[in-house]
Image 1 (tube, rainbow, N blue to C red):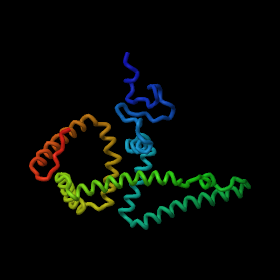
Image 2: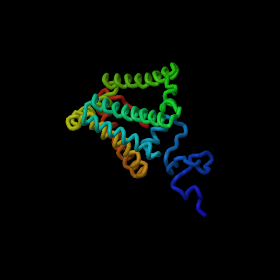
Image 3: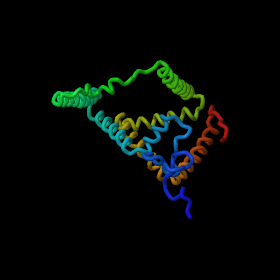
Image 4: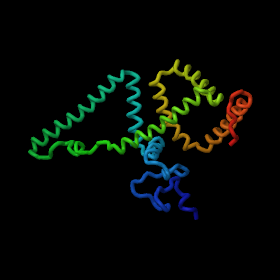
Length: 232
């Protein structure tokens, strides 16, 4: 008899390999669970891998509409229309509920009272945590910029020069909004394709990586001022 764990393409995310809880999203076999990762990175992973189709579809559709709107209209127009649309919905709902309460002579109160009473203040501790996390990334970026522009490693600086030279051609064909739209399509499309064809993609990527490392090693050996990196 076949092992029950191999009869389904999905594995349970519950402890001990038991049956999943009702309503839980199944994790595809071979896919990544979120053990040992932060809740934020786990949420982003689930979002781009379409674990919850409705949530990902909403985020993808909303952001894509926003970018397409920005491509056709100015930022001020897009923001103004969004605020007007939101106010139209909330004001209409507020007036509707007030009329219903007046007709039925009920005392339900403000329809958004539950949301108005929510505590959305940011504590000083949380603010400092966000600032500290941001400073880690800023310092890392500054260190990388100094390394590249002051040519600590000649090959790395040449890589940046080549990339920037290629970006001049990209910028001549696409504007920033178009690149953002293409980037979003890739972010929400590539992970799903990679998860489906992981074995084949990894094989070709490994071949390209080996050839690239070999080429870079040859260039480093011939260029003066290049940092000799230890082989992995």
